Amino acid sequence: PVMVLCFVSVQPQGIGEPSVYHAVVVIFLEFFAWGLLTTPMLTVLHQTFPQHTFLMNGLIHGVKGLLSFLSAPLIGALSDVWGRKSFLLLTVFFTCAPIPLMKISPWWYFAVISMSGVFAVTFSVIFAYVADITQEHERSTAYGLVSATFAASLVTSPAIGAYLSQAYGDTLVVILATAIALLDICFILVAVPESLPEKMRPASWGAPISWEQADPFASLRKVGQDSTVLLICITVFLSYLPEAGQYSSFFLYLRQVIGFTSETVAAFIAVVGILSILAQTVVLGILMRSIGNKNTILLGLGFQILQLAWYGFGSQPWMMWAAGAVAAMSSITFPAISAIVSRNADPDQQGVVQGMITGIRGLCNGLGPALYGFVFYLFHVELNEMDPADSPDKGAKPNMSAIIPGPPFLFGACSVLLSLLVALFIPEHNALSLRPGGYKKHTSGSQGHAHSPQGGACEGKEPLLEDSSV
Image 1 (cartoon, one colour):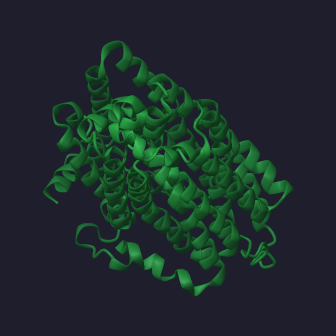
Image 2 (cartoon, one colour; image 1 turned 60 degrees about the horizontal axis):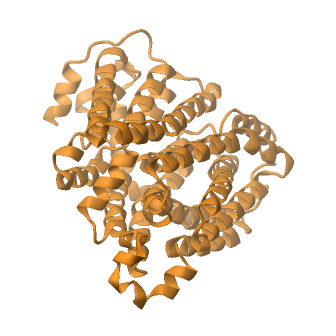
Image 3 (cartoon, helix red, strand yellow; image 1 turned 60 degrees about the vertical axis):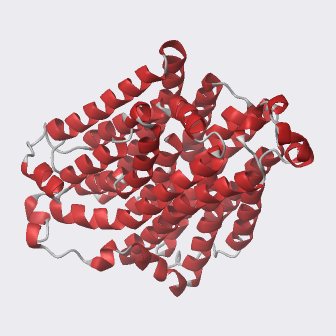
């Protein structure tokens, strides 16, 4: 609290009026800094935990995801009372705090990463900031801009980081990332104006925070009240659990098991990133208009099953690239789910329902990585199998890893298959008759960008990507 008080008391006013561009710069710098570290982080992870790299990777991301899930609603509620700027400062500071520790002490680095989950919810504060300064009809475009910026920072930075660490070593990359994180913090301090006017806040400092708002499980308890919402939530849980796990361990898998070089991993991230942006803007708009909302969800889940199964059985580099293109197509699922949610919920229930979906995704961000790490561990997919000659116990289990190189991806494919079966029962036209304009509004929103106009939906998509960069 003392720290927060300091932040709040020494706030200059910022430059200009609050705008979406302020939010865009903050997001770009934060994730650009983390993206640079994609290559060095894989190296440090392997050096620190040579025996159980996948297991530890899963646990670190799992703890971070669960802490974010628990703290996101509370930080959102607090920022409603104390203003956005101080919390932007707090979340960016804690998200980037582990960066310099990577070279100083890897053990502390991983400990701080998992603990930083408590404050690593920059996105929920950024979306609140954007919501403060935009009208409802501009919101989906504004959220789209923030999301596209995020994707752009991820498309460029891993490649730059890989090149620099190849040419000048990891230490330089860590120093550069630390400098960019500091620049971000200075930018928030000096340039970002407060978006929530004093008069809008509930009686400022003495205001009681409603614990209902801050309870992460509150939204999950409401899930069972409406059958459609229940079906959608089960679909999200079953399809997002493997996705969160895949994001946490995938680059490590490509680098160590398939044998991609750092440059190839960076190129892979860039290509899949660009394809995902295309899928979520152009392709999504076309599909929503031509085959309808529900079929778009089913198609996206179908793509997801295909890419997970391909990663499960495939062991050739070209298969990874082909499945990556399919994975980019499967990114249409979540925006389509957000659209069907916002069409089926009453106007005054939008926030609650989107909050439920976000809550479930937050829970998956904790459970998915830990589950994947455990399955890798269970099937003995360890990094020392990169060179079979060095591994004496390889002979004991050659068949399993030869037939199924990536067991967790197959588990994931089965989970998404279940989710597809559940999604078949989601009604296509639930509340449409009540609001004939609802559908039209959505297609234009999804063309403009992947996300439906609700903040909750976007908050759901982004932390997922956020974890992928780390």
